[in-house]
Length: 209
Ligand SMILES: C[S@@+](CC[C@H](N)C(=O)[O-])C[C@H]1O[C@@H](n2cnc3c(N)ncnc32)[C@H](O)[C@@H]1O
Image (tube, rainbow, N blue to C red; front, top):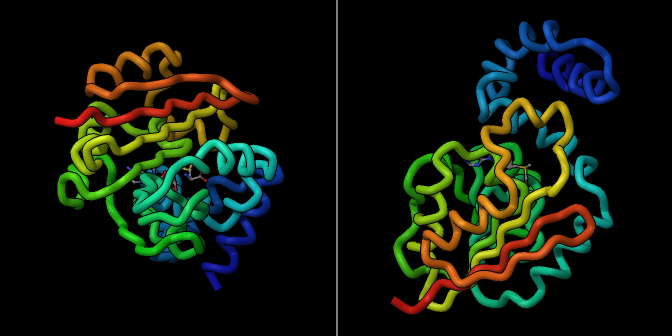
């Protein structure tokens, strides 16, 4: 019953109804939402139910197109409920992972910690709309490089515009594109950067070590 009420409240919130306090108190009786919205796992678990509608079909198909050059075993960091190409999906939210039907394997974990994958494992790594939520972003970028094979590719995508108000509460950084480019170069990636239809794309190659 509490779970149904919580889900109905989430829909109302989506339409701008001020039900945050009611939802906060209901969340204590819903195991996957406990501590919502402050707790990050609970926050993203709740987002999972409406994730299909949060990013437009046009953006999805543009990103899919831009990733179509990748082949082999891909790790999708912060995959959420939607991986653009077949991937090993990694996400903090079990609910997001439940909804994702493009994963060969699903791994639940926190990108603020070292990644639970061996070095030189993946042909490519993708991370779409995620790095702006990561405090320990330098560690994550170097972990991504570690898990990539030599000459492997890393593609990172972020919105070039301000993100919507509700998800913005979880944003922990909002660098200019040049700031991200410098961070990626400092990790040792060779990269191409471009902007397309309100999105920033970094296509990075790991140099042979
Ligand atoms: C904006 S969504 C993007 C989802 C997906 N990449 C897409 O393009 O639809 C951000 C995703 O990052 C995940 N995430 C946020 N913080 C995380 C963390 N610390 N560790 C792992 N995943 C995290 C969330 O659960 C969510 O699925």
